[in-house]
Length: 175
Image 1 (cartoon, helix red, strand yellow):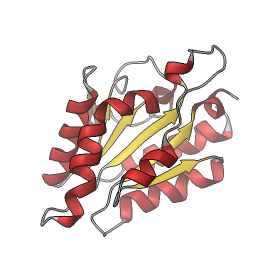
Image 2: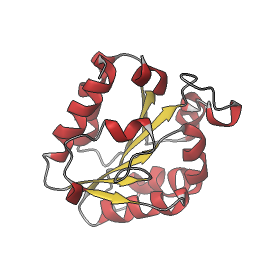
Image 3: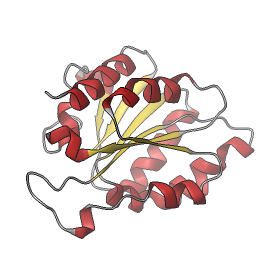
């Protein structure tokens, strides 16, 4: 495991040690994506496998947050997170302006070109565009391994009712 993947795994184990944290998404219980390996050691009871229904997944994440959990919602690529735009922009981003407080941690990634280039429909990086659209959700691009632990700690410990999207660089998992 390289330094980038090791730091992600360390951050996920730290999050999993918190009693109110749950991990949900596709390939959180079964292998199939590079993000799966970053969950090594996260107990199965902390994981919720979701169907291919990204908008629903984000809605479930919001609901879990309203119920007092801190969901860590995995969307392996930005291009898949696009399918949850309605929930992200119209609901999660607006929650701090209501009486409801939410905190969702969203993991997404810029698709990897190595070892196989999946094509342009899987390589998007929409970090700057969504940061311009959203008023309260914070977007943090994790360009270096040293950025990972502080960013995930910030996302978990924040008390301002805001959610955080952490953008991982998938090619760094494969270096």
